[in-house]
Length: 377
Image 1 (tube, rainbow, N blue to C red):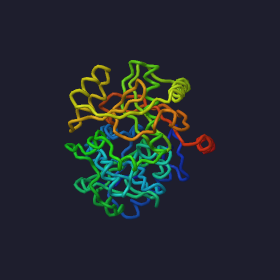
Image 2: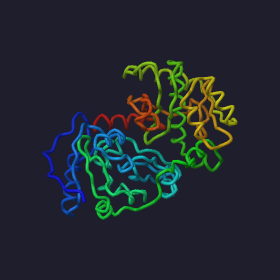
Image 3: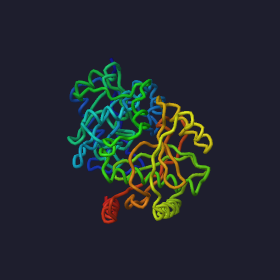
Image 4: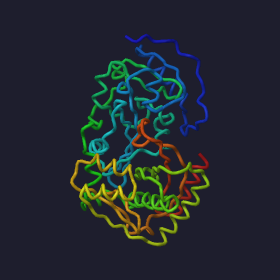
């Protein structure tokens, strides 16, 4: 049994703007009140500010497999419905996007934007609780959590964690259990990413989603024009836009975004046609070695498939199986918004890449409205 320690005095979070009305400190207070009310067995662990599972687990002294990996996902159901899911799974596993999408009857899934995720969860990324206190956020827990005796997670703050008896967590959270963790031996996601898209796949993407996906290709091409030695990571569409991860010869600065945008707009003016094709796996690896893209080679090596999908626009070629707009002139209206660090494949043991975020909408009015809302928030 885990003894419950006295709650230390509250410490304000430093240098982190919380875009929710309650704030992370209120969420922390709500958590402690819930645990105390139901006489849950828990203890608090203070540590240096950290929210990445591997690193914070080392600080707390727990096996990462005993940590709660809490992720907010956005699922599109048809053309008009958007659903948000709080997926909770062991810290040493990755979420199976297809499993969550199928559970929700969705046609498209991605990580929720940071702004939306923090608003729904009530705390900063890296500190999401394995509880949902928001009716708009459905809690789905992988059954593997049941096998853990003590569950560790950040307590809605970066500098303090909770070690909670799992049986108490399950009683309080009353979660919906579904298999949502990707098996280490599973290749279901990888197969979906590399098979040639069918007409049904094409129909599952809205025009806006195709624009955002195509926008990521244009961003990658622009960065390669500026940094020919750049190594490409991944660049998925997300809510409100897209991002792309890069291994670059120097650290980007905010002023670089305007330069990259200029290159993107020139690519748009060229109206480069998007073409998709497949290559046998061996030939695909040989091509990627020739153009010196080690991260892409790693992705191909992990694929259990005979062929690999590519997308080409102008001189730029990237691994891809998803649908695009007709040409680069039709990607819509965008703005590059920020630069952040991101570990390759989300693992702190891997290299830190530089992630460029963008927002993109069909019309300039929608883009300007969104940017104005962000300024006023």
